[in-house]
Image (cartoon, rainbow, N blue to C red):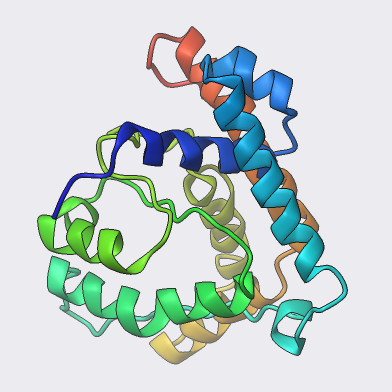
Length: 206
């Protein structure tokens, strides 16, 4: 399997920027990408948006947030993670995207960066951030790290849980009740946070 090309990573970055609300001019100025590439991705992205307008399926109108709970003592090895990607993550992403383009992002955990998982993603996910493209130490850039986990923790820690079932129910409720607009605003903060990290020469910003 060939490593994704620079063109692949370039288009992935452009799509992320578009979804964050950035204009073509801003993307060209920030990344220094060729105008023809940026405008080509813009045109295809908005054509896809237009074709899906008004054709939302029930799954697109309401996105249930599914979680994965591991058994006590179970380690998240590359094999376990691949099983979750195959059986849970990819089917969920395809349901939510409903044919619209998306970029799959993950952090640098060993199971994520393994050859097994990277090869599977290359063969089964149209657009994902290859491990060399994603910064190796990126909690300040990952929305799960800088927002989602904190929200879930605050909700679940409001009271003590007598057993695992109670804790699991609280976690599921926290995700189900999470504000979708707040999640969108969180994802839109990606570029400003990226710029802050660059200004900090790759250091932490919080």
